[in-house]
Image 1: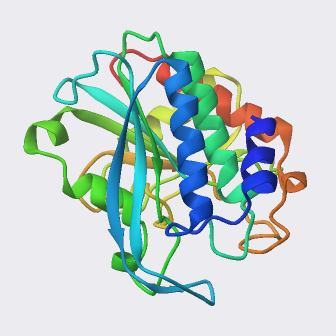
Image 2: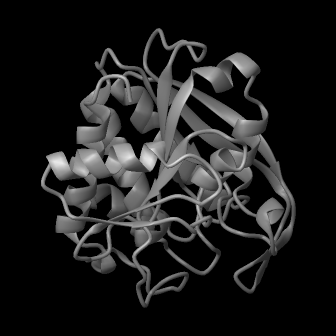
Length: 261
């Protein structure tokens, strides 16, 4: 996981959703999933121009990277684990959000042969390009809007891994506050079973889980510890803590191991 964080933050660096660097990161993540044995689809998303954390960014077409195990049927009950791959323009994004992507890739490696189907998604353009929900979370908004009624029914849970590696006393487990608490409750119980301390919040709408929750789909966010390097050029691999990554990985593994979640 630390090697993946270093690759994204140091070798690729800042990667806002319509940048060439984002395309490089998307290609790299797609190849990682393919090498693990997943079927990969690039879901193209049209993203508007705007201002992202004080910097103007252009419109463009940019992909979600969707990885499904062989034989996956999205009309059969399944779970989704997602992490946004983009950054704000000035940040190399080690914590926000190479940390989430790295944990997602490790979970994909560990669970590729599971008989409980899990889809993994690297979302594009999560970072804001203006105020309000409609100028945020573009990749996950597009994914949700394209779901059929049968696909929505089959999606049992979505978890967004977003800023999961900063040193902390516990793993934050959050929801937006307008939908079901079921997924967060499952995560709390799984963390307890794995002897991982957690905190909870019910007003966090700043990640891709919110695109699902606002569409009445069960979801939760793992992560969101405040840190000084947030959205800055100082968001480098040194801000990420190995122990916190391990806690998040253990929590998610315990959750994925529970039948019928």
